[in-house]
Amino acid sequence: MPSGAVVEERRGRYPSGTPSLGADAATLAAIRIRCMGCGTPHPANVAVTVCPRCGGLLDVEIPLDTRIRPEEIGQGLPSALRASGVWRYRALLPAIPDSAVVTRAEGNTPLYWDDRLAGYAGLTGGLGVKHEGHNPTASFKDRGMTVGVSHAKAVGARIVACASTGNTSASLASYAATAGIPALVLIPEGKISGGKLAQTIAYGARVVQVEGNFDQALTLLRELTAAYDAYLVNSVNPFRLQGQKTIVIELLEQLGWRVPDAIALPGGNLGNTSAFGMALADLLRVGLIDRLPKLVTVQAAGAAPFAPYFASGWQTYAAVSPETMATAIKIGNPASTPRARRAIEQTEGIVTTVSDDEIEDAKAIIDRVGIGCEPASAASLAGVKRLVREGVLGPDSRVVGVLTGHLLKDTEAVIGYHLRDRDGAARGQANRPLTVPARLDALERVLADALHG
Ligand SMILES: *Cc1c(COP(=O)(O)O)cnc(C)c1O
Ligand SMILES: [Zn+2]
Image 1 (cartoon, rainbow, N blue to C red):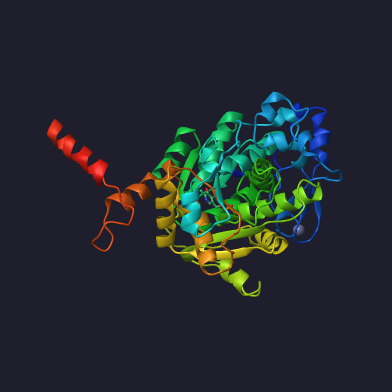
Image 2: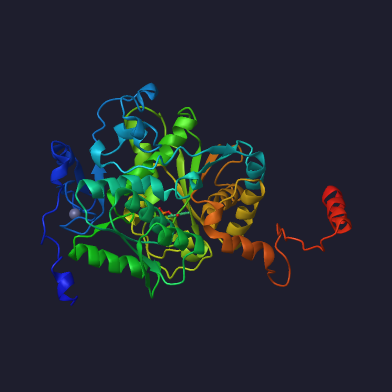
C-alpha cells in the first residue's frame, strides 16, 4: 500500500475537468473515443487512455464526412496553429479547444531525396527520407506530444507521466514545461542514451530510473495511472497517435498528394505504425489520396515480436526479451500491436526484421551522405534494402523511409562505430580523427593524403 499522503490522491478524490475552458468544455466533451475491443464510446473530457470497461485500446473518432481540398488545409486557423506542422491539419485532428493547445511549432520536417541512399537500397524508383529528427526535441515524438499534452491541459491534468526508452521522455518533459504541468518520467535504468536523459533532466521532469526494462516500467506506470489521477502519455494514449498521423499527412502534402509505393518506418511500441495506418485511412476518406501505399514496419531482429506474428498470418504472437543497440525500438511486447496489425492489413503492408549490423551499416551511410539519424531510424533504410534484395519490393518502387530521430540523440553509438574495433578491425565506414603535432608539415601531409587518398 502506498503512503497515506499518496492515497489522498486516489483517482476520483478531486474533480477533473477544467472550468477555465468555459464554453469550450462542450467542444471537448463532444469528442468521442471508442474502444477497439468492446466498441464502447467514451467522452473526451476525462483522462482515459485505455478502455475503463475492458482495458482495450482506444481510438479518437474524427468526424470526416466532407471532402477536403488541398487548398483548404490550414485555412482560418490562428497563426500559432498554422505555424505548426501538426495543428495546420486541424480538420483531421480531434477538436481540442484552441485555448488548451500546447505547441512548439513542431513538424514541418524536411523530405530529402538522395541517389546514394537509393543506390544503397537497390532502388531505381527513388528513395526519399522524411527527417523527423528536425522536430523541437529532435524526434517524431513531438508530433504526438503536442496533441497529448494539449488534451492533458484541456482535462485539467495536474501531472503528466510516461515510461520511455528516451525520446518520449525528452518530448514530454519539454511540452509539460511549455504547458506548466509537472512531468513524471520512468526510464529503464542505465538503458537510455545520455543525450535523451540530458534533455529530460534539463527540461525539468522528475526522472525515475526503474530497475527493469522498458516493458516492466510501462506496466508499472499503467498500474499507477489507473489508480491515481496522473495523465498517461505513452503511445497507448489515443491523442498522441492523432498527432503522429501528421507525419504521413505532411509527407503526402510534400509529395503533391502523389502516393509512393511504400512508406517504411522502424517499429518499437508500434504507435507510429498504427498512426500511419490511421492517417492513410483518413486521407482516403476525405479524398486527398486515391490509393494506399504499403506500410513497411521494420523491427530490430533482437526485439521483433511483431514480425513473426505477421509471418504467421496473425496466428501466433509471443512477447520477447528485447536486445538491440537501437534503444528506441528495444521493446519486447508492443502496446499498440492490435492497432498496428490493423494498419498493416489495411495497406497490405509488410513487417520485416534487420540485424543490428544491418542497422549500423545503414546508419553509417545515412550519416555519411550528410543527413544523419539515430540508430533506430536507420532500420527504415536497412529494411527497404533487405526487401528489395529479397524481391518483396520491386527495384523500380518509389519509397519513402521515415527517419525518426536525430543523429545527436545517440552520440555513444556514433563513437562506438567509428572509434572502436569490432573483431579486431575497424568498421566499413569508420572515420577516425587524427592526432598530429602542432606543426605545419604534419598538416601538409594530412592535406596531401586527403586530396589524393
Ligand atoms: C519511439 C521511436 C521509435 C519507435 O516508434 P513506435 O511508435 O514505438 O513503434 C523509433 N525510432 C525512434 C527514434 C523513436 O523515438
Ligand atoms: Zn473496451
